[in-house]
Image 1 (tube, rainbow, N blue to C red):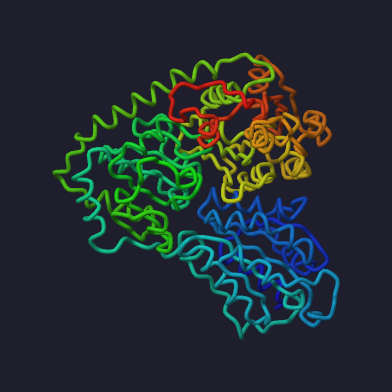
Image 2: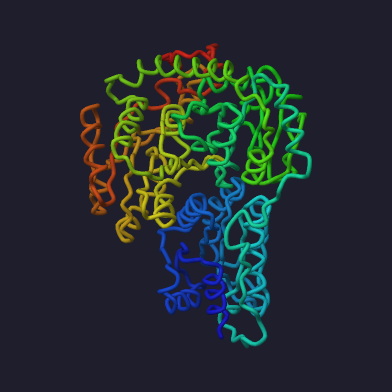
Length: 583
């Protein structure tokens, strides 16, 4: 049995039915083995290794299984680093297989030689080189165990080509898979005895408690459990950007998005005014706390933190209570242990108070959501998208890049269907993920249409994957926010009080022409009427399609970013939107 066949069999035994990658000189033996097992595992060829990684990342975010991608030696490995780093920092279980040069060539100056194991060490939970073909099954088991247990994360295996060409006596190895590690979280950690009781003691004395749903809630598939807990205790919930979707947006207890980028002022007000803040699956980082400057009333001594990683507990604040546990397990235990005499009605004035804020915000938002300006205002685009999504009536996966769409989508997107997921990679904020991510989302669940949102900077980085959408028949709806610049960076220039913007402008792409060159249905959108028409047609169209939306730049008007508004001497917590010029 060849090593390549052992590797493929181990992947199949772990339930891997799709992997993403790019062919190269060194991974030919792996591809030969995959070809022999086409009925068991599908290989999705990406147009570069970075895209393959973003596909695997999206697949893992939208399933309970790790995403797998592979690459050849040298440049292929280097291109694979950005998405793997994003996955690891976002606690997404992804496994990268680097098929590398044969071991006998190590240290002898072979072309593409690179110490990949060391390269990936800083951005993974584990990065190792396989040095014995007989150890392949053992190391694959370890890779799945590490990726899926504890805090999920990324694993890298450097597999020399000769390990795949070696003949292995099947009687000397075991090809078994550990059932617990086929999905994540593997071996989830339950809360220590007495911890939930301590939480209820704090809740008994709180008049304004608040849950904060972080990305760990979605990673643990704990949204339903959090909804049930919040309803039973009558405690409102705010969420971080990566925690969006934990509760449906139209739920009475779903107050909104906190933090810096695309925040809801009423949600930030809730964090400011709460007397007991229960963070679930959030590391309480710089975006959530606006660089640890918000809330103005310190979080010290009013925080409960629930996190699967004990190293994160009380890392940034002096917690009243720290609970090391998987989000779903601790929320389920809270439901079970809720005292029968717990008075949930005492929180009603607090919930009503926050909902009055929320209603006030949305009433004022109409003034910008309905604007007919040209170039189109981002708020108007989100408003029409919301309307069409509601008419569509089906669950979708929405995948956004970290650029232009972020502040407006996080603030104004409204999702009432719990099955619909909204994903933005926020750990490093790299561009170019959304187009490949829709491929991963499609393989995660082919009953939900993937929708990708990105600026023209991201589009230019990943445009080659349009071919992948057509080749693999991915019915993605793509929304290109086109304004001819790196708007976020240009806005930062202007935020300094001058218009000396350097190295941020480029020729806006002809999105419709580019899409049509790949045989993708496309529209150019410049007016509100064209926007409505294109959305109607795009939602009805069953194949891949692209809307080239000519939109106002983030550099034309200060976006809803807390720290930016504060720098303009405005009140970020004002419930009425303001049109704020940079200069």
